[in-house]
Image 1 (tube, rainbow, N blue to C red):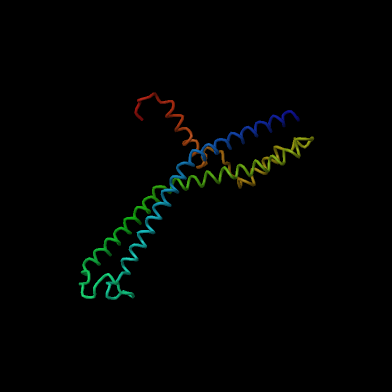
Image 2: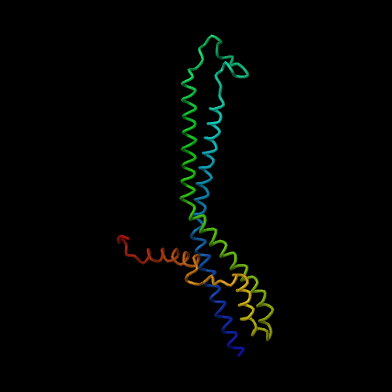
Length: 198
């Protein structure tokens, strides 16, 4: 009976380790895309904010006649810049801000799947780490004595509570399916003969 329990514990540990390894590899494969997405979004947001400041400055600009401090380099007899120049600069600043905002929104839409999947896979991996930490503490207590026969029951209870009764390793689980598909892509492309079209 005890030998059967020990075998069962080893099998369960192997399953947990392989699932954690798969989720870790999936997370690692997503990390470069996640970092690139964040860098691009940060750069586009900075560009949009700069364009917004330029637009606000142009819209707030007044002809020199109404400025708080007169420009000493301009003679009071010099003609004012035509209103059409001011209007053209304001319109140009408005359009530049609109383009910058549109680029930022396009990038957010384009990167949304990467950011969402990274969040889901990260949460899955973190939950697996929490489960493993709890179970390793239980193993330290139970494996040293005859209590090892209760480990499968404790493991099942901890697993049920942490995963809220769902099976994270089921083929129908979206994160498991996503990671399996993602990790099979490099293997499939590596197995494809050179020069063969997809």
